[in-house]
Structure formats: structure tokens, C-alpha cells
Image 1 (tube, one colour):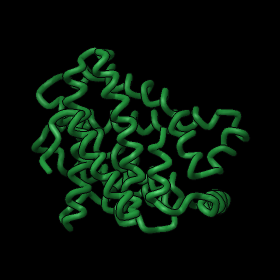
Image 2: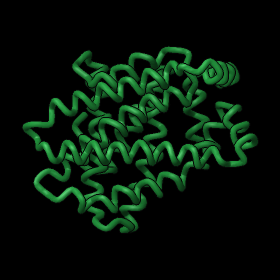
Image 3: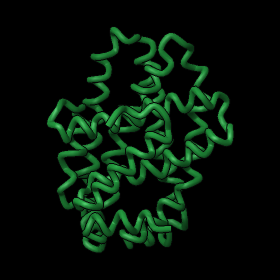
Length: 251
């Protein structure tokens, strides 16, 4: 499978991963589904011309997606993958909550891949020219937060309890966390951009190391209360991955 050159091709390759995961009951498809849904939303906004520079945003989005797709393919072929992606892929068979599996992928992709892709896309250009569109994506992602939580509730019943206890404040927490991650990614992108291609490898490795530490916290939080809640949540979740993905995809 060749590298994607358009968002349409990205979506097609994500569909392949999702369908393979359904066929093999692989948790690798959990993040792929969430990522496909958000990418489709960005594609719709680009088609409507809602960014300052729609062509440039698509170039960034495709470069961003290819870092995940490349990591997925490399891991399956026993090739070198970043530490944070290796950690996420290595733990797909563990009894974590559905949300934890998704967050491991989101952590590696947003906190590492996004800053790398942004710096590369704006190499030789003024990085601040893309800042408004970079930030606009935050608002688009939050628009579908409720939808994604509703879909996850189909396979993780305690997601519904978050709505009741938090009076919908949990969506704001999710939005805040996403924004904070993207803020950190923007800072990382500026660092890599300022260093330039020839000097950024060491910085990328340092960022990867920090992202790995976050992944370790996602998998095993220090708080006993949080660990208990996660264990309880996992107990009531749908276990068969093919069923999980089928229910997430259902209209």
C-alpha cells in the first residue's frame, strides 16, 4: 500500500485497518476508528472551504496521517517505530479500557506526530501562517466530542455515568485535555521548525521520550482510585473487538 497523498486516500487506508481489525479482533482498530471519524470531519470542513488555507491544511493533515499509517505498517513488519507508538501497539492485547487503548494512540499521534508533521509542512515557510487553521481544528474536534462519547457509550456503559455525574462537564474536560495536548504539540512544532531538518532529530527523540512517559501514566495511573474506576469500567465493557468496532461504526 502506497503512502497516502490525499485525505481521501487516508480515509481508505484507515478503512483497511479498521476492517482488518474487525476480521482479526485486534484492538489496533480502536484508535483507527476514532482517527478516521475525526479525519472525515476535517475533510468535510476542507471541502467547504472553512480554513484560511484549505490546500495547506490538507497537506498537513495528510502528512500527519502518514506518520500513523507508516508506524502501523512498520510495526506489523517488525521495523523500527517510535517509542511512544511501540508502547501503544505493544499493549493492544492487554485488558485496558477501550478509552485507554484510544488514548494511547491519541497521545502518540497528537503529542509526537502532530508537531513533527506541522514543522515539516511549514519547513522553509513562516510557521505562524498556519497557526489560525491549526487552532481552528480544536473547535472542529470539540464539535464531535458528544457524538464520539455517545458512540463509546454503546460499548462502554460507564461512559454514560460520566454524563450523569458530570452534568456534561466531562465533554469540557475532554475538550480541555485535547486542547492542552494540541497546545503542547504546537509548542513542539515551533521548536522543531526553529531547529530545521538537519538539527531536529535529537529534539524529536526527546519529545518521543516525554510522550512515552505520558503513555505509561495512561496505562497505569498512580492513583488507586483511578485504577479502581478503570478496572470497574473495563469489567462492564464489550470485550469482542469486532463487536466494539461494528457498534462504533453503526449509524
